[in-house]
Image (tube, rainbow, N blue to C red; front, top):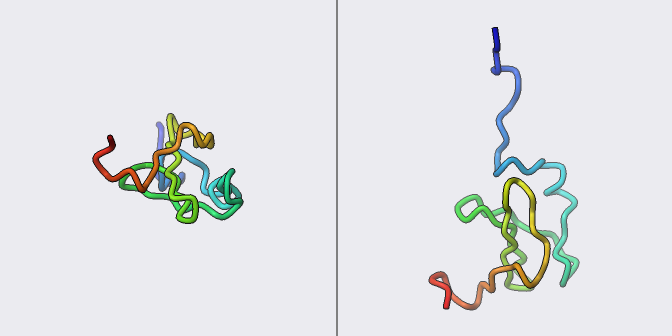
Length: 74
């Protein structure tokens, strides 16, 4: 018998909430906010959104989406 009712389900993308508490933007050194709609970590000051792939935050500025570029991309 497998009863999975005792384990809470991850709130976001399988990323450990404790990890999200300590991650900071590599450019600004400021806290990040999780955006559940886009599954990204957002740096409001840098105007960047870092993707989360397979539950792993990709904290490389060159992989981040520029928030000033618009919602539709290029």
